[in-house]
Amino acid sequence: MSLMPMKLMILEDQVILRKLISRQTGFFSRHPTQIDEFSDPAEALRSAAEASYDLIITDIGMPGMSGIDFIKNLSAIGCQASLLIISGYDKRTLHTIADMARRQGIRSVHFLCKPYSIDQFLLRLNEVFCDIEQKVNPRALDLQQLWQDCISQPLELAFQPVFSAPGRQLCGMQLVAMQLPEGPLSLDAELYRQLARNPQLPALILETVMERLAELLSELPLALRQNCRFSLYLDATCLAQDNLFDRYYNTVRQNQLSADQIGFLLADGLDASCSPVCYENIAKLKYFGFPLLADQLGEGGLTVSNLLKLPLDGLRLSVNTWRKLNMQPADIAALLQCAGLTSQQLTLAGVDTEEDLGLLADLTSHAVCGNHISGQVRSSELLSYLQQQTGVEID
Image 1: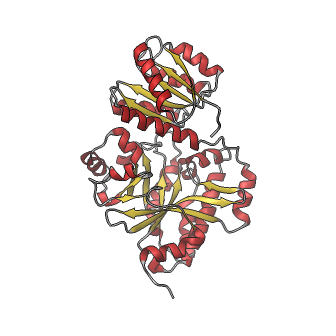
Image 2: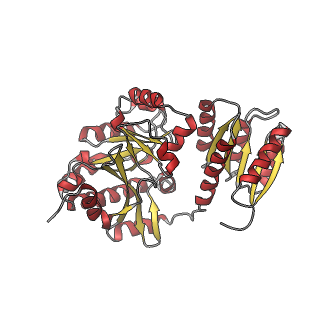
């Protein structure tokens, strides 16, 4: 990180609370900070338009302009700051506001309910700093070069293992990145947003990745892969392509694989604005036998109402979302029942710290994945890794 101080804004109309948040932020920050304080949302918005802030901490209930309108206006002026909402509203309302902010284009959004403890404040502040530290100002992808890199050589892929709990048996591998000449490229929502500049490219890239994945699986002995589902990311842009799963089904058949070996992590919900082709492809996916999984409920475009409509075979819930919503095991059980799923079909994702792992103590029969569980496994390491995890000896 640069030695230049981080530029922070605090918007809170109650002067005592504003000063308290400012002192706490400056004291607990792990970086030098320059903090601007505001009580008037309109004045704060003018400053945000003129200066580049790393973090904006805002209340919601304020005179003159609500925090909701303030956030919408931040997005309208192209503000790239991380956002921490501190408010007396309940967690579900704040979660809805945070989702609104993300849909408006603010990528890093966290919230904290008043009253809060010092430990809770420190936890949220560290989450925000982690986002800022990991944030790379990505160069715009050269889409033509990316396509050439994908088709010019066999792709090196990277996977994140998924383990069943509490036995910690390997039960899945999520495809998370591909290795290009200039370095790894994450196969995630941000990549597909950039690919969408060319409406045909998301499906072409995914199809190329799918073909490489099928080749890799066909080279593995059945004993190593039969109890391990591989999964990859899918979004609405890809679903809008004609005959998508007809082509994927032909790919798995040509490689003598079963369709249930490869699942698709759907990041987007489907609504009236989606093309009819999206619904057709969901039906085709199920017809051919591919598993459909909900990816990161509460972090992307999926909502509980989507769970009632989609024929899901699994659900991923991030530990971060679970913590924000203060969910209890009974809440998770009710969510799974709502989606017609069992605890065996739940994966707790983003288990990146020992503290995250401690939250899972009261849950059973679920799966877990994250940096604290295991690092990434490249395709060149896949055979030896599966042998190590399964204990199966291959002649």
